[in-house]
Length: 137
Image 1 (cartoon, helix red, strand yellow):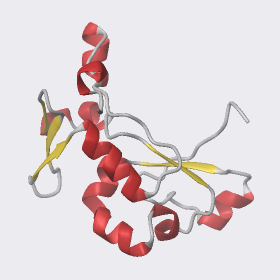
Image 2 (tube, helix red, strand yellow):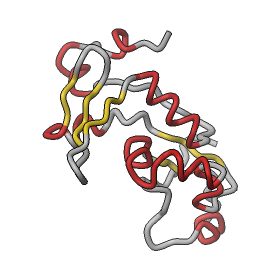
Image 3 (cartoon, helix red, strand yellow):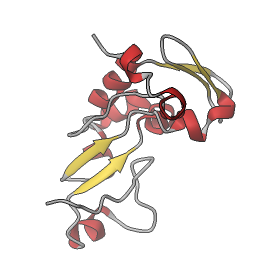
Image 4 (cartoon, one colour):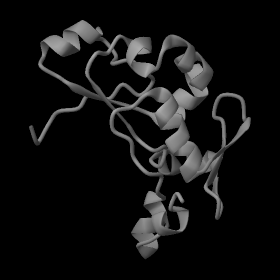
């Protein structure tokens, strides 16, 4: 039913509430962050746990963002290229390339029910494009 309230569980946890408490509030959709989950705990750990649903004890729908918001929020750590976004990890400086294809791959590994395409929000505000150049084939 729309509109809907969707709590943000950036790193597969809603701060201050258990999954059962969130469920008791009638919530059936939460948001996880693709970029952050890729860094911590990492896709291998999420796969080993059986996906983000099991990792965080969430039985309902899960939406993942594309990582595109981090192009803004972590802009000082990011270089935009024709291929995607090259991030320097804010934790250890390690470079990570997030392409549209990689974003979708990570979201599938997370096990999201609803996934988003990677787009450059800042470039869209300036010139009205970028997702088109990053279309996944």
